[in-house]
Amino acid sequence: MKEILCFGDSNTYGLIPNTNSRYSWGTRWTSILNEKLGLNEYRIIEEGLCGRTTIFDDPLREHRNASKFLPAVLETNKGIDTIILMLGTNDCKTVYNATSEIIGKGIEKLLGIIRNYSKESKILLVSPIHFGEKVWHKEYDPEFSKDSITVNEGLAKVYSQIAKKQDVLFLDASLYANPSEADHEHLNEQGHIALANAIYEKLRLAS
Image (tube, rainbow, N blue to C red; front, side, top):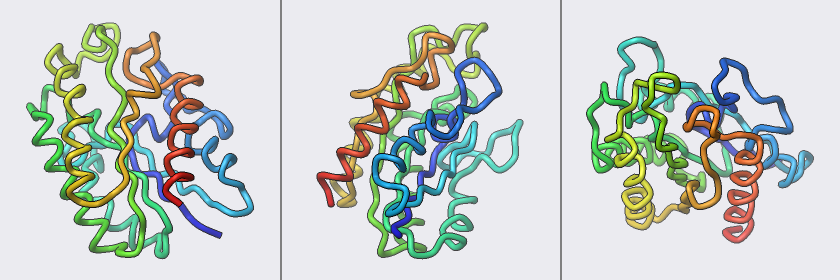
């Protein structure tokens, strides 16, 4: 049985927009992907954490820095066939004051960690979905700003260049899925389906 590690943030975790709850198995894109690939042939390892960043320490929540946590995940899960890496959304928060290019540097560091700990694994780098235009409003997520939208929209170009340089697969999630109107940040059920289908096709064509 092949194993695929899905390493990301709340949109990999499956957070239901504007709640603290999680979509059930069968609704999360990770589980839809597993079912499309075949439950008898593939096992998806879900490693999504709300608030996770590439390289930044969250001043309010512990264990959000992926560069500190990823090595342990890779050591725990030896022999992974494919690693799907989708991070960068939370790096756009105003507290980190990061540009798209700096976030890209964080992604490069994570790719280096993967290559060091899991040399044989194939890698699919996914740039995150775009924000809705109101994401920074107080009723949604004021940890972001208007500038966060611009930074977020610049990630696909930066990530695609990194993927080409690092010789890994790349997918721009914003081409296939949009944020929910409920919070302008997270995937709704239709978004999870769309993303799962896009990733499935990317993996199928690359196999």
